[in-house]
Image (cartoon, rainbow, N blue to C red):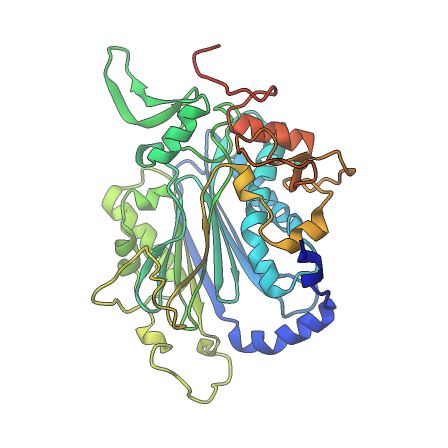
Length: 429
Ligand SMILES: [Zn+2]
């Protein structure tokens, strides 16, 4: 393969200079607000603006927002809030250009989620958490999620997009099939007299979710592998709402956007929580983060640029509704810059599908590191991520990416395989 020669090394300083010029024009303003009503005290948030890809350069900034809705205690939620971002960043090869960095995010998010899960499980036996994790770089929004918190987007053009998956067993047949095939049992709570009540749960444990971080006591088929979606907004921006299930049990996406339209982000977050409580009462922790991604000239403090508005960038019309909306579906036929562009979407629970090197540069930099935990390995020590795969294609020992032995063990456990590579079948124990 000629991947190495194709990727000419450009000094980082040159890349940054090239980017500097464009970023000044391109970077949106990120304005956020959050509100929360606590019932169990197990919702936690992470709000970080002004993170830097290149420390100290002052221009390569990005923002990170996370919502962690814990269950059976708050340990997993707190641990993920404190460690997940670092684990994701550790999985991004160094010295990438801005575009390469953005392209490397989906893979790094998978590695970071799995590493956080492994590390947490080594420390504690119980508690788990949903995670909705959002990274905003320029106009590109990348969302990784496990569990049933949600992130939704309304573009300035008025279309609504779902940027997270719903990993509730009740409404996700694919996940039910995956868990059953890995040795878990899915069913409702049996009251004893044969009557079954409540939502579908996974047994042992009785969790209603199919993916989470933590939950060691529930079973390895409750995996931390996130659904990842990456979209690029038009330069007119949009509004994101991230909320825990307390909000979504009460409000639809449309209701959430409608009830706070025109309000600044912090008032909007408060309004969404208020609206949810109005509909259902405080039955669960109810948390909302609202993030406005706006054209930079909308900053009140900044000097006004010459009027070069193209109609759609006007703030007051920013969240207007289109009369007919297609919603939750990216129309690929429209490629003009004023629509949301889908860059990446993948939800498979199989690590081999998620960590495969799609970007040549990852191989160049990370050949002898575990693709999940980033531990350094000697050549020949790593286990190919495709090992044990039923895939008929011939596996060569140098086919990466590679896992260290403990991450390989985790992979097998998640897929319901035992150390000998055989399928674990329920009922045989
Ligand atoms: Zn590892």
